[in-house]
Image 1: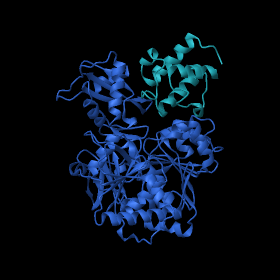
Image 2: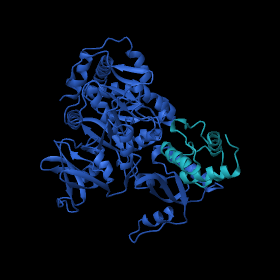
Image 3: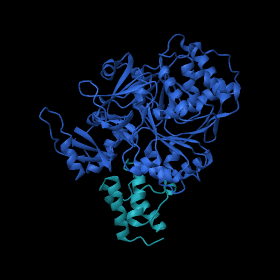
Image 4: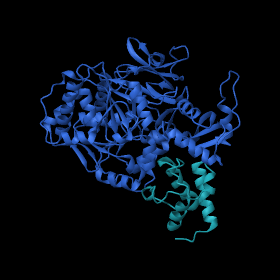
Length: 83
Length: 504
């Protein structure tokens, strides 16, 4: 677990904005990405790849579930736990 | 080969063998025959000589194969509709097919439907302890009659029903069992929802060869932990999926021959198989065969196949889609309908018994794509391909149909529905590539007046409105807004201009 810095949060949000192709994410950290249709099973693949490449955090796809990884903020917390 | 006789025989030879497993639900060959005969008998009494198609609505429920067989045994084509299909779209399908009866495992999710609905769970209760009737197959769907109808995206804004006759399904399954080394009693993964004909690639070969289907559902896919737990228990021998689904599974480090020690054949259909995916699969499953196949829904699942070798992977060149099944032929035609020289690109035209009967109730559309070549039924695919030494290569589409993660869709259908939404004046939908494959959709919208304070809220409202008619995989991920769209000289929206903008 690392401390969640603004820099880390910004980095994760920027990956999310890229993968979801939506800048709106940055202004709406509690947005439900799957419910809003911004993320689906195939989007999560790209996300997992980007987390690995850009943050050096590997998340097995089996750990990725829609309840614990629902919003940008929750994703930041999940990633911090794994760093 | 008689499909129904072969499936029925397992009820005598191995009545207690499992033919279908979904979570805690299991079905034996004895139950499959007994229950489908009972329901077929009831339908014959109910409908008499009326052989109109029947909708089977649900998701991976073991009652679905029972109902499919009950329909065809009583002379009705079945229309498989997945639970993920929005209710308004189910109503469109019911209306267009003039179905009088719908079997559904979630009847409450279909409030708008005018046809009679039978709750599958109530049916199951009634079937318990019932005495199976003696039943003969003389009412069954005949060779030139429709066996199933699969609804696919239509460019005019409405889904269209692709009709597959029994003769075509027989031809397909015979080929699968003869050429793919699928002997008796294998376990097949069943992952594609029944709305997609990829599911036919495992369903009938499994049931005819006395195999067992292991069903993977959407809940598992949404929670990959469950998916891999289910795969670990499955013991599957034969994997059938889109390359996209396999690619998702490859993200899990434990996805290998240690998780699936009995896996020996991987079958791919529905979209281009990327070399990178095959390479990684070969590393994870060194002893399994990887088979690439190709075919539109209109010609019954697949008509070509090829085993991917290590040499093909090492060459790095895009894979061919394979050789045509022996009872069909493939022609590559130019714009004037004449054969092109060997190796040149042209339209892929498929001829032979795999070719279906066209689109239900859509004579014009059927005529535009189906005809007869050398006295064989022929389907003009609008796919671009070339043939070299009898091996087919696929290069894309001649129109605005695309495959997104294996899902077939007409961009014009999405545009049609989007333009009919509130707050939309004009819209086009553009598929965005990642590498050489489509990754997601972007809608470029000219908005009308709207009450929302931000475009984000407007996008959210549009997504909700689209979701009433379109399946989720057809809903654009991103919406961008413009005050106008560029037009071509003949008054159509110029697709190439917004494409450039969106990509920047």
